[in-house]
Length: 94
Image (tube, rainbow, N blue to C red; front, side):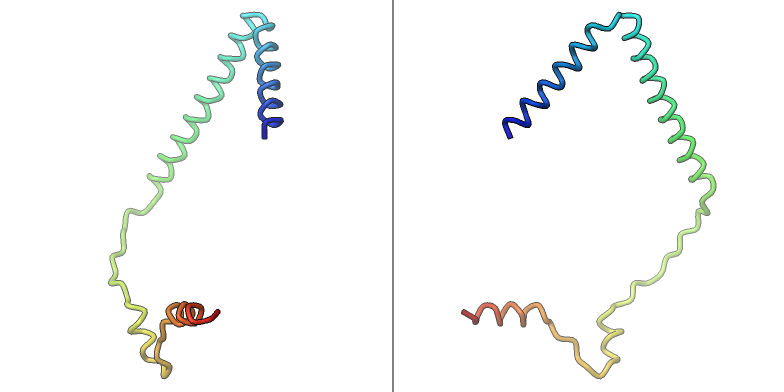
């Protein structure tokens, strides 16, 4: 783990050295380019969200929730709690 940490730290130090060796004008250009890319991506996401909201039909269907136990009770086999059965078996086994 220490070797990985030192490898990553050395890599970041090399990147920082390369960044500092770069002329200030080029640093400024890269920073503006990255910011412009981030702003463009943000605007694209906002436009997509607005488009999705405008296209969706605003109808919400409200229905009753069916109880699954009542639906299963129509079958001839009665529902059993298998988890407690398994836990009981494991508790008594040695």
